[in-house]
Each structure stands twice: as structure tokens, then as C-alpha cells.
Amino acid sequence: MTKFLRDEYPRPQFIRDQWLSLNGEWEFEFDDQNVGEQKRWYAADAGYSFSRKIQVPFCFQSKLSGIGDPAFHDTVWYRRTLTIPDGYAGKRLLLHFGAVDYEARVWVNGSLVAVHEGGHTPFTADITDAINGTDNLLVVKATDYSKDVSLPRGKQYWEEHSTGIFYTRTTGIWQSVWLEPVGPLSIRRLRMTPDIDHNEIALEAFFDGMDCSEKDVRLQVTVSFAGSVVADDVFSVRHSVESRRICLHDFNDHSAGRWWSPERPNLYDLELKLLVDGQEADRATSYFGMRKVSIEGGVLMLNNRPYTMRLVLDQGYFPDGLLTAPQDGDLRKDVELTKAMGFNGARKHQKIEDPRYLYWADKLGLLVWSEMANAFQFTESYVARMTKEWLEAVEYNYNHPCIAVWVPLNESWGVVDIATDKAQQQHALAMYHMTKSLDQTRPVISNDGWEMVNTDLIAIHDYEWRREVLAERYSSSDHALSARPGNRFILVPGFSYQNQPILVTEFGGISFKKSEWEGWGYSGASTEEDFVKRLKDVVEPLVQSPVVQGFCYTQLTDVEQEINGLLTYDRVPKAPLETIRAIVEGNR
Image (cartoon, rainbow, N blue to C red; front, side, top):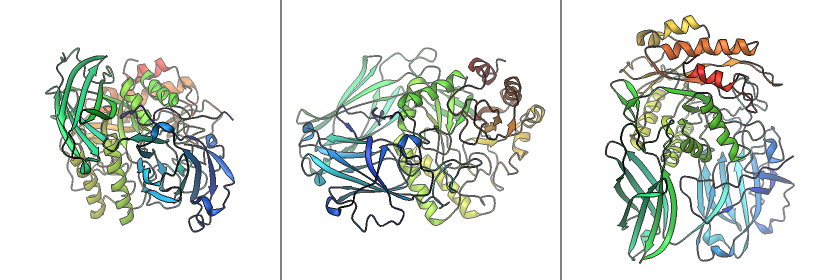
């Protein structure tokens, strides 16, 4: 089997030149009796030899890990030697994990350096004090809870073999691991908010090490577009968080400006230099897009103009890597194929996506609806887990211009009794308001599909396949809101329609076997000609509807037992791309 090494820079929204990828071969062990920590497998003197090898960042259930075992192994261990490059001497060493499902405990030379809960969000450990010389022992214990349905898990099935709408589980490390050296004073992160109405970018910079600094600290910011500097600024840093608004003194009109959109994915480059007593202490580069998503008078807008969102539902699964793309190019290819079929956006379903996918969506121009991986049972522990992880996801992905909408809940997953249970209604309201408290620049959907409480968009799931039924159902807002396509109320009783834009955010799901995969869909096509006709029958009524302002077709690819993709699981189109594009864009 060809080994795939994910060696691209893992955090494209905040780049430093000096870094070390820790992807590749690690020692690996199942710990089905959960005895490893008691027996000190994390220590060099434990005397325990791991029996397997694994290719990080691929989970052991995937083929690309080199193991490919779908059985339940809820506790697993990773080990490798961490060799510190000579150029890192005198620096603080930050160990980054893109995602570890679900709980992670990390040791360096026997010292516990990190504990993290949440299977879809990144975390960082400062391991400086645990380092001992050049070669060091790095050990990770990952614990999953495969059968716990109160766990935010998305599409990962709680049975051994996937079935229906659920897929193979992911346990342990599934995004990149890497090391980064920084100085005593450094830029921890950056929050960027575009304001196209005033042609300004608002910057909020967060710093580490300021609590012990009595020196002159300044941040130098340089903004460029297409290689030319358009703005620069230098300001004093006196606190661990500093804010600044920078006016972009460049030409930017409504028709030919530099705003970001799927049609014109214009990006500004940003260079940050942290200066201490005039000497460079840290440097990082980033980028941003000037764009605005808003709702005016019941109309969904992009950059102050009405905009129809033509989305495709994208599960983000790969045949050999599961949640992890084999290579960075595969993520780019998915964006390119999505756009080639006439879609201007993707709803990333039940998955906090790899930052590299979001980078390609930023760069190539694709709107993204960012959706949390949901649980299936409402409990106190679920609420705590869900809230914490969603907060981390919103914070981490805030800067991506491609992200247009936040979706914390889908189809009442985790809140199955929301129609009648006041506690579950309050939870959905809390997720909605909490998200908006963190981000006032993007719409938030309280419960995508049905049974919505307060929500910025009415997002309806409707797998009706008869053209005439869809045409009648979406002939008016009253008809759309009174229908119950999932045998559920669109709005929870007691919550009224407030003139929000109406979108059909799941529909279609036409199955068509175009490969050796066997599976199912919501309606079936027998030939390519039949498939194209059925696709037109479900898309055209929504394109022609006087009230539908956008849609999301299910789905981009076949996934495991589902064969309702526009592409096969290995990304082969089931009809010519230009044919699909003409239907999606309403030109056929």
C-alpha cells in the first residue's frame, strides 16, 4: 500500500516559517482492558513494547493507517521519539494536535503536558519544560466512547459496521500533529472581522508572555493585495489582547472591487511582526477576505446584494482515509468538483472540517456552512460536551471568509423531544444565542431541517421526488411553512415565522449505482438519462420557486453504503459535470 504523508502546513490561516511535522509512522497499541495508564505506558522505564505501527494522522479504522480494523477499540496509545532540531534551542516549544477523537492525554518524557476533550477541535501543549535534550519520548493516549450516543459524534456509528446514514467510526488522531518553536513573547492567535461598509478590517490580536514583560512591545501589521501594500500600521502592545481597525486605502467599488465572493475569491495578505525593544520577536502571516453575509428585509445577502446559495451536502469522507483526506490535493479537488457542478457552496455535514479544506474554499471561492458533529441523546454531560466543543470550533474557524453560516444543530439530533421538551428548546436557544454572542457577522440556524426555535434562516429538509409536489409546496411561504416533509413541524409550536429567508437545505438524495458499491438513496435512478431527469425534477422547482432563496442538494459523493452522490465515493461524476452544472444553475 502506498503511504500518504500529510506534510502540508496544517494551519493555513496563521503561518510561521519554522515548524516540524510529526505525521508519519508512530508506534501503536490497542488497550482494550484500559491498563496502559496504570502500567505507565507513557514512561520510558515502563518496559512495554508497542506491538503495532500506525501512519498518523489516519485513524486505525482506515486503510491508510496501515491497520484498517473497524472493531471496537476505545482506548489506544501512540508513541514516537520527538527529536528537537538544533534551531529550536532557547525557544518555547508548542505541540499542536489538529483533532483527536475523543479524549486525549499527552505525555512528554513521562510528564503529562495536555488533556483535551472533544473529537473535532484542535489543542496545543507548551512542552518546553518537559523537554530533556535532543531526543524525547512523546506518548498519546486516546479514549473514545463508541457506544455513547450522548457524545458529539456526527455520522460515526455506534455499531461495529456502518449502516443507513451512519458510517465507520474514527478513534484517536485524525488530523495533523506538529511542533512549533516560538519566543518568550509571541502572537497566540488573531481574530479578523471584515467591514465592507467602511472598507476596514478589525483586528484583535492575542499574545502570550505579556504578563512578565516590562519591555517596549509593538505589533507591526502590513496588509497587501496581489503583492502590493495597501495598508500598514504599528501600535504598542501593553496587554495580552489588543484591538485595531485598519482602513484599506485601495479602490473597492461595487462592481469591480476586491470583495470576496465565490465568483471573485479575492484575498488580502497579512504580515505580523512582533517587535520587542525594536527587535523582531515573532513573525506570522495570514490572509482575510472582505465580505459580508447579511439579511435585509427577509432577503439573504452577500456583499449587500441578494444572493442565492446553491449548496451541496458534503460529508467529508474518503474511502481509504474516512474523515481524513489522503492528501491535501484531495481536499482541493473536492472544492473544484463542487464548483464545476455549478454549486457556490457546501454544507459540511456533521463534521468540523480540516482547516486545509477551508483554506481551499477561501482561495478558490466556495461558501461553507459550518456544522457541528451532533450527539443523539440529551443529557447534562451532552450539553457540557456540546457547548465546549462548539465554542472551540467557532473560535478556531472564525477568520475563514468562506464560512457563511453556523449550524450548531441538525434535524433535532441530541434534542429529539424538542417539540415538547422545554429544556431541549432552551438548549437550542442557548446554542443559537451563544453563537451569535461570539459572531454577529454570520447567520445562525438553530436546528437545520425542522423544529426550529429562534433562527436566522428557515432551513427545510425535504426528500420529496415528485416535481409537481415540490412546485406546489414551494409556491408560497405559507405552503412551505405549513408542509411537514419530515413529518415534523418546521417551527417548534410557540415559535412563529419572522420573515426569515426560506431555504431547502436537504433534498434530492437520488441513488444511482455507477460503481461496484451497493447501497441506497431516497429515490432511485436506473440509467444516466433517468438520473439526469430526476435531478432536474427536484432542482428545477426550487430554482423557479418565488420564495426559496437557496438550496442544498444531497449529496456530493457516495459514502460507504449510501449511493446518492453526484459523484461516486472515489469522486467519479455520475453524469457529465457540465450537465449537472446547467441543472444546478437553472440553465437546462
